Image (cartoon, rainbow, N blue to C red; front, side, top):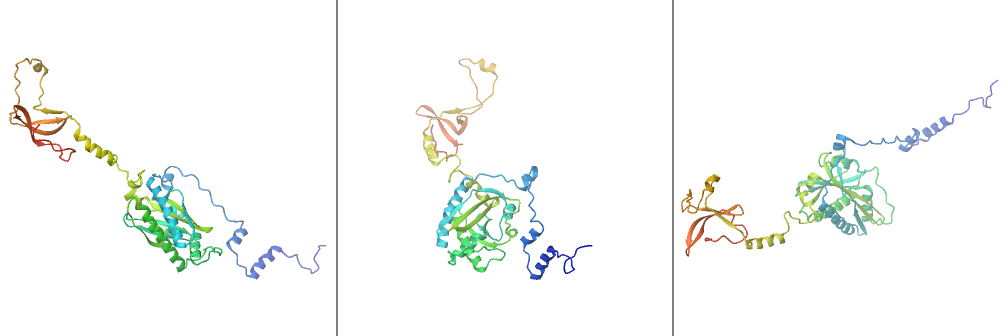
Length: 351
C-alpha cells in the first residue's frame, strides 16, 4: 500500500516554485542572470598566430623609426600638462606612452565605448588624425569643471553624452589640438583643428582600415581621477614631413654642416693646381714615334690662331689662344668652360 501525505496530494516541486516566484514578482532578468541561468558567458576563442600573407595583410605593420616624432610627442606631453592645469584649475599630470604601429581598423576596434572620438584636421599636410577620449576622462573633466571634486565619480554608461558634456570636451580637445600645432612647429608649421566628434568608431574612419598608422596614449591624472586619450596618426597624414621626422637631429642637412662648407669655399681658391695646355691629340703608330730624331719635324693639323684646350686634372676649364707678352709665350683665354659661380675669383685674361 503506497504512502501519501496528510492532505492526500503529491509533494511540491521546488524548481517550479522558484520559477513561479520570478513570474509572480515581476522581476526583470538582467544579462548576468541570463548568463548564470545558461551556465555563464561563452569564453572568447583564442586567436591563433597569423602566418604568411595573413600576417602581412591582417595585422603586421612595419615600424619606421622616426626620432623627431618621439621628441615632438615628448614636447606634446609637457604642453598638455600645462594646458590641462589651466583648463581644470587643478594639479593635472600627463604621461605619454611609447609610440607603436597599428592598423587603422584595429585601432578603432580597440576603442572602449562609450567614447568621444575627435577628428582633427591637419590643414598644411592635407590629412587627418584622431583623438579618442575614454568615458572616465570625460566624466572627470565634467565633474571637476562643475565643482564636484569631492563627489564620487559616476561612470557614463548606457546613455548618450549630454550637450554640456560635449561642450566641455570640445573645448578641451580644441586646446589639445593647439598643443599639437605647437609641438610640431619645430619640425614643420602645421595647424591642427578639431573638425567634428564621433561616438561610433566606424564613422571616424579617416582612411582605409588596412592603412598603417602610429598610435600613442596620453594618461591624464587629476586628484586621483582621470583617464586617457588615444591618438592616431596615419602614415598618409605625416607623409609630407616624414623625411623631417626621420632625422636624428633637428635641422640636420645632407652633405655636412655649414661651417665646413664655408671653410672649404674659403680654402679651395687658394689651393695650387696643375694646368695642362693641349694643342692637339692624335693617335700615331709606335714605329713612327720611335723613329723621331733631333731635328725631326712633326706637322700639326692646327693653325696658329686656333684656340687650344686647357685642362686641370683631366677637366677642361677653358679654351685659350697662343700669344706673346714681354717676349714670352702666353695663353689668352678665349672661352671659359667652368662655371663662373665656382669658388674664387674669375680667371685672368692672360695666363
